[in-house]
Length: 250
Image (spheres, helix red, strand yellow):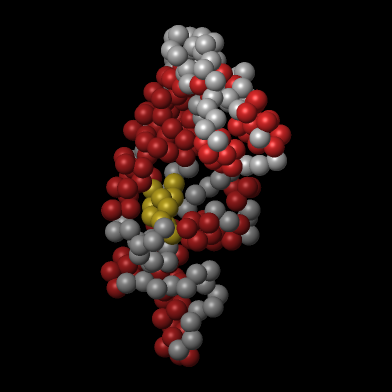
């Protein structure tokens, strides 16, 4: 109890709890029960930037020099440990702008239906028929005056890249089909099933190739069902197409 009376209010409750071997809550309850109050301290601390009076807890923290508002300003931009000079990556900025201007309109056009396997709803992606890098590189080439190393320049480039995205450059795919198209076996959509994607300069299947591929799978599935009532196990994904999708493929 003597330690509590001597130290309470002169050091933080956390340090006092370690000395007494109790929790902070126990220290506070015990001090309240014994009617021990903190000492009136005259040397209050003020914010070094705006001069605002800091809380009493700041007296016991050597690192507490600023109020919350000034501390947040100090940690922003150049003061933050992750500051890269104001140059944000280009692709995340484009992706944010693409969603309302390109991704959602394409999904609405395709009725939120995977144009590969016919699955409707759920998690969907929009696949770049024309590779993103080609669209990006063309915009950068056509606008050499824009400084890519500044954040403002990147914002301008991002807007121009989004404007260059035509709706015909995208197609709606479910996540498994999207992964399949970007895999090595997805070369079948390009008519080169034995060529690695890395060796094809990142070629992408056209919308017509995707639909023709689905049509071949559907015809094969219908033919096998008519003979043996067994599904086509050679297909990369199970085909479950509605009548309007089958009609489109034909």
